[in-house]
Image 1 (tube, helix red, strand yellow):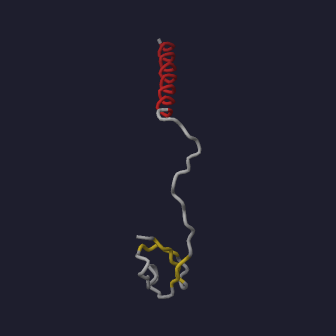
Image 2: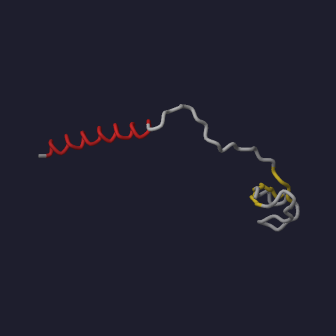
Image 3: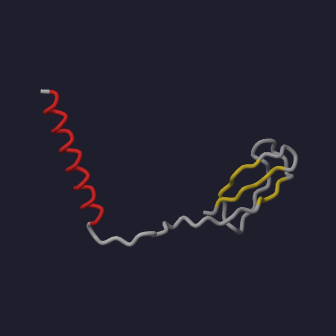
Amino acid sequence: MPTYVYECTECEKQFKVSHLMTESYENCDFCESKGIQRVPTLFTNLSKKITKKSKVGDATKEFIEQSKEELQQQKKDLDNER
């Protein structure tokens, strides 16, 4: 169901309402006034943009390499403590 933003002309507060396109909303959620109007909103594209094409397994390889480096550093730290 789409979400619409409304603004009250009396108390000037905005609120969101979910309803079908064929339905309308009548009263302000704050002051119960009938003087409300729908506020135009911008469409937001929520799809993720792919900026870098990577091969399958690249993220896994990178994680393994980082883990190896961290493990080596931890071993050095333990040796220094002894």
